[in-house]
Image (cartoon, rainbow, N blue to C red; front, side, top):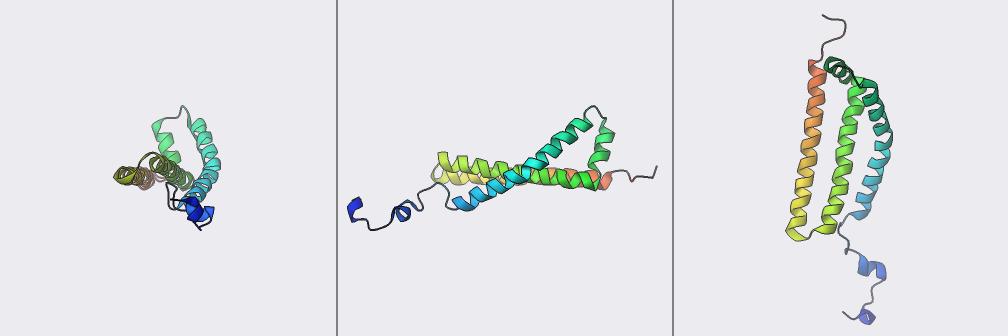
Length: 135
C-alpha cells in the first residue's frame, strides 16, 4: 500500500493492529486489580506470618471467621483475575489465529477453576467450622 495515497490519520491506520481489540479496558482492569491486590497482599503476608507454627485446627478456626474468609476469598479472586489478564496479554502477543483463541480459552477456564476451587474450599470451611461456644 502506498502511504501517500492513504488519507487516514496515523491513529486510524494503527487502530486494530494491536494484539488485543479491547486494549484500553484490559489495561485499566490490570491496573485496578494491581492496586487492589497491594493492600490485600500485605494483609495476606501478615496473616501467614501471624499463623506460622500454628496447628491445622487453629488455621481452620482463623479461616472459618467471616472477617478473615471474606478478604481471603477476595485475595483469591483478584489474584486469579490479575494473573488471567497478564497471561492473556502474553498469549495475544506471542500467538496468532486458533492458537491464540485456544490459549485464551485455557487461561480463562483455568482461572475459573482456580477461583471456584478456592471459594468452594472457603465455603466448606465456613460451613463445617465448629461454632464458637459449643462443645
